[in-house]
Length: 439
Image 1 (tube, rainbow, N blue to C red):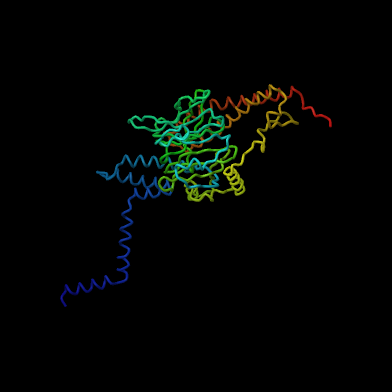
Image 2: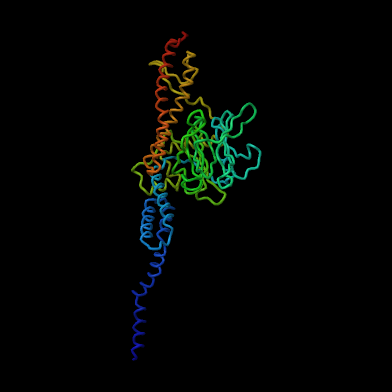
């Protein structure tokens, strides 16, 4: 038998062996796996909010590219992406614990109609509807309960000569509205600002912005008015789960109904959004050490809203309030006390009408407004301090300045609040005890 023919027969037998066939089947899978680049693996990790793993992969790719004489990808781009992922990873660990009770998918044009506010919380509307004019930018407005102040998005010219949106305020003077005055103190580098909502305290402002501090497209931010000049403190990104890598448009809280809403287009088809309804927290709450990394990622992404139901009795009560709002039922203030203020061992007042002393009543009105401001400052300080603890070194300087600025007014106001309470009690006690008529 010729040698060449013998070798061909042996080779055919080897190829027909089961082990050889098994190896041939494995080869394509191995090759396919190797074609997934490190950058693609990092992108996949980011998609599921595994930011720590994404950062490891980006660091690995950055190191590999730096060793090459001719890098095949942009090193500056990888560095910027790594820095962004590390910053977002810190936000993940500060994910706020909220209970979401409902979600509604609708078109962008119908989204504001899905939010049913009580009269006391003001109203939301589109710029086009309020001013009966054409608007191609999708600007919105918020009008307060008294219908004498509006926060709105107005067109502004960019440095490149284009048109964008910036937030402004307009006051009603007599029967006319003043021209919009731009809000000062908000992100100057923002590409766009829209969707304002003012809390009933009159100082806390929520809005959406697209800019360098955003996680994705539009992100939700919170700030508060700093004094009578109309300026605002440096805005704070609301973080997860309110924000995502997509557009998160508007956050509104109705304190009377104890309900909140936010709008997002995450996981939605084009031109569609989801309106989530949640129970707002009195103070900011985050998840503890008992929450696994996988669970935390799911909470941040809002994978399943039922997983947020930590207290089903609260959920049931909130869903009933939501049903009442949708049915047009009125929410009265008589169900709960307006406040709780101890005068002495035998008297605790809950309404202004309880006061017998005109001086004490007048001071109590001032105390209530100051108390609301102190509570707002305390909540904002907590959020800023939480952010400072997880912020990058470059961001800490700005946060520290804002914290000191807020502390400079918060602590004096707290002392003034205590002094005012003492004056109220003294004035009411001097008026004498309540006279009980004999029956």
